[in-house]
Image (cartoon, rainbow, N blue to C red; front, side, top):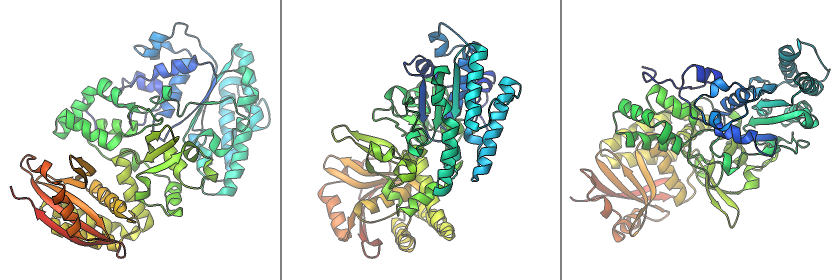
Length: 526
């Protein structure tokens, strides 16, 4: 069965009309649109990751400005709007422009303008250059309708992202796109509302140097939840969907919610943003009745993996990055690190903000992304290692579920010694992160830096039958690690956890061998 009976989920649907007419589940974002339409400014830009609902948002805006009141029955916008009016709307979708050749780029933009000219002016070509035709079309619609014009541009930066890895081509593409977008400034007096979406922020590709009238709402707290599904929306508007998924998974609704949060939540686009779930993955989970890497599996740009490797970064480097706002809002083609591209693409998110120092802490948002990045970097760095990687994970999972932690640690020692590059292990914190990612890949519950009354346990791993309390040392000894567990009574809080047995594990990592070289296992007596 591919979907739950009686509920339709708009996975991949980008048309507001189709969504509403088809009776699909809809998270009402229309209040945001009403607020934007009545803001003091008239031109806005929003950056969000791919498949976060940007195209549906643009389609909803189009329906609103065209005055299609019937599509908004029962929404917040219907309640808020008292003066429905229709405006001429030009909508541009640049996501379809997929080329690395500048001549083909010009040809595709020519096609887009020709379609608009056929739609609005019987196919008459009103000017010669691309920018000239765009400007003439705006002026024509303003005169014909005797109303200002609305321009909606979806994925404005898609053509440029195709050539991010080629500086020469990027510059050529930039010049074409800059000339194409100039009318959005030149025709300001004729424009009622302008809205652009993309992955990279408008400052990053230096296209909009003249377009200083754009208001960037990407990090505006008021619009933090404009795309994606907030936790309040999930627990309110989609509570029945969580219950239906729970029944499908054979767990309680609270457990289904916990799994959804662990796998798909964690996005924050402002320091005080609400918890935001990946909408594509969340709706896919409801539609298919299972939790899996739907968003990550739908495509990770090669340029992103290239950028990570080119800077010598490993997964451990992505778990916690301190950065000024200018570092992840920097021009992408001039960025010193992949931080900006990773953040805007949705592979990093805001975890914390130090208001006094103006420093943001970025990190991987959730398990779907951490697991996907780990697997992708293993395969991308050494395709031949994939079978070794997968074989190791299978053997380790079987060993731990059988309660044979000795065998599991032996397997981990061999694996880390043979494939040390993809997870990183430069210090005790690095190896702790390595453990976390490996167990996360296995689907085994692990918590690092677990707080107790006497201190922080490096890792607590929970399987069906056993709780493993683990302490790591780096360049010291397993005996020292185990002594710390005993001295601080780290195992005590877990001694009465259901029917699970408790196992203390002290582990030492060798900085020279870059793997485990010593461990001690001590089973707590009931």
